[in-house]
Length: 234
Image (cartoon, rainbow, N blue to C red; front, side, top):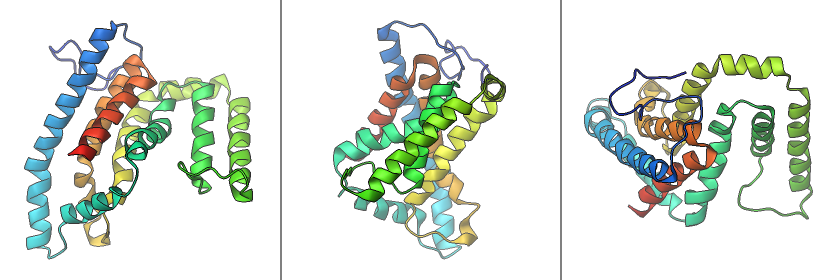
């Protein structure tokens, strides 16, 4: 299975739903190439699409610059510890958006457990075992995870594997859309324009997905860590 048409770059840009057996050196090289090409494409997106669109929104539609609103959110993120932005945040996002792209009972059950924990308002930085709500949240999440594992049949996993193309595309798009929350103030009149501002996240999400499916979860997570670390340091 592949998403894009093959090219002469040894299938580097192709998302394949199967493990690729490369040496550790080749994997590291492709990790760095993914970071490089991701940043190049993101820069082009910003220069060709986002900058002109932002000028149009502020100058002709008379709304605040979306880029400035995103910048305000980024400034607030400076108060968040570095390890959360660079390690814990990406780890949780990788579980939510890409772990289950390798379809099996364990990955899906683990996804549902983490998803339930966050949905019930669980924190990824504070764990108070003396807090009744925290214990209820943990027990509920573990219960959902166990039930998911128990009731997931081979028929369901086979069906999901047959639809994996759509799941991959949905994962990349949703990963981008969730970052619309970085825009401090949202206006319904600009709803159709917001997706352009999360194209950078979709681009890097594509490369993360590529590594995750070819080399495994930790390689996609590593690219996510590098991307967040670089953007935070810059």
